[in-house]
Image (tube, rainbow, N blue to C red):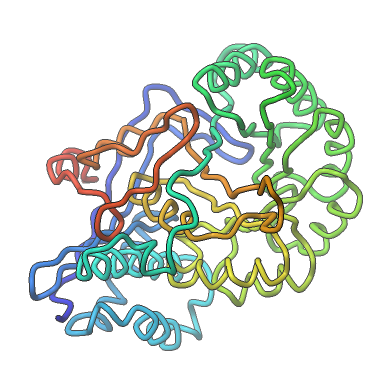
Length: 377
């Protein structure tokens, strides 16, 4: 079996209303999918996190290493591409492109052997995953103290046991909305906050001390990803667990974060940090350092499926406990017309629980009519 072709699909959809995180407004959602076909007709699907047109160019550049190659040699191909692009692509768009390719190859591998990817990754520890609702972004109009509280209460009523709030809009405002959301969801729903690296260490510590009283599950990306010293400073100053890593890449980048003791929780994005091949290695490193691993997920149903396949095999955070603490799935609840539309069978939650797909490969089937409908011009 050999790789016959590699295609890219850039998708784009306008939103009914824009929303913001700490550094930008969104009025569209985009995705960049990778389709790899073999000479015996198997098709694998992957997804790249990052700027769609840039990751598309990266994937097209890498295609020359793939045509005619054995798609089952996932590690061989990963290392070959990484080595040949090492001088210019240790992080960022190149690795994001490689991630989508790697996920598609694992999809092919699972389909070839007729098993879900998680079986090839070592076997499932769990068949379903607790999800947390990501949302609670800012809107163009309305009082955030009110609409964020109402939105969070809605997630709790859907059955989610955890929600994540976007902060980074000013320390005082962040503290006020955190209090409002905590009051809206009550004490039994976990609450995490995510600054998307909006602050320096001084401001992050100030905010953290103001919200510690609200039992925060983690403080995500309090400072820029390059500021490892800042992460360590914030972590030392607060009782809140510190999370990050969606802007880091490969085992080499995460080695530095782990060795520096900068984080309590690693959050590699499977579609960015190097794909399933690399993220399994990162997860094994995290286990060796006794650091928790909860993947960042921000994409379509392909990203969800790939993350679920990985989550199925991750060990519990507290493996020696009678009531082990399990890793969670980030379940984006913001508007994304493409997310579920590209899947013939959407990935849904039931009372905040998401089942791991059990079909061959990633366990999802792609709706080509949806690809045509959302294809970017």
